[in-house]
Length: 386
Ligand SMILES: Cc1ncc(COP(=O)(O)O)c(C=O)c1O
Image 1 (cartoon, protein in one colour):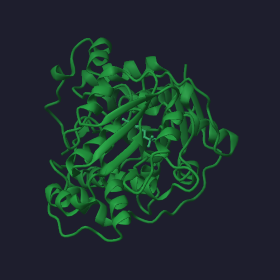
Image 2 (cartoon, protein in one colour):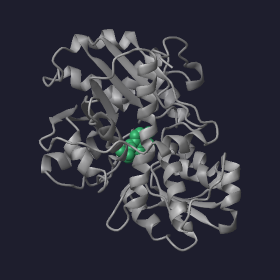
Image 3 (cartoon, rainbow, N blue to C red):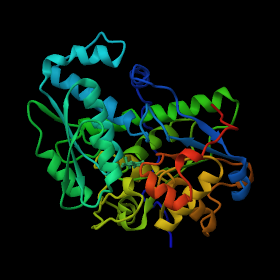
């Protein structure tokens, strides 16, 4: 079952372009390089569109999701604020770690449903800081182990992701920074930096498209948890000359952005949130993301877990590894094309569609169970735009 709604809150938006300092910061991070953008004619043909592009965040700086882009920039900006100055000069993360070593013992904390927490733990390890990550009940062992493998202490909170967020917020102190990707009253600056950090992914997409002479996308499909990543997408695709139809995808039982758009205000979708798209299991939109999400998204699509599983298999069939959450964009697009709402552009046969696959196989055991083979056996060798 799917739920597809047109956003009644859509309004004209003219967001400012992201600061070029963000991409320059990421270029100094270890193992940074743009992730691949794939041109997938098999899927374009299936959906009757001219071109279907997949930005694949299967591996980003050695981690299996895009989240490090937000976590790294937000950690850096939070450190600058804490210090009262920019810890320059530094050319690489070791030099940055040396410039902030006098803060130790120092701790980074966050709540997570998986990827953001691992990214914050990764930053803490690189900077020589301690790390404490709060996760909701029911998180599968491989995801907890992945966070522990970065040297972090992991506490399982007896409740939902939103409960873990509340718990993590209590840790803030003069020697402990909370680096959350969601926001609440009085805690807005760091999550705003997380959103800014995500802008690099969209720059990379534009660069790859321009370098290869392709058209910019007409339809962009982005998965949503608290909507922070979508806020970065809205910024990019509401910039003058870069307009696209924006589609947000959520799990049916954690469709907090869709429910909020229907209600006309931020609304809470109570748990338990038990979708296999765990990165999207959020009950409340981020307060600071919401103004851009509510005014910028065109269509909200909620899908069930079967839709995500099918999308994992479809992406594996074209050689792209996508975890449960990562595959949501394809699941959502498939649901939209099957609905009366389609087409959402005038001439779909001329349209370029962009799907953002936001993670690789973060739970390899479940990946193999769903896809029928391990992620290491899936690989795309052709038609990478870059
Ligand atoms: C892989 C993945 N994709 C998408 C999202 C959604 O991002 P946001 O919560 O900013 O909407 C998340 C969030 O954790 C995620 O882990």
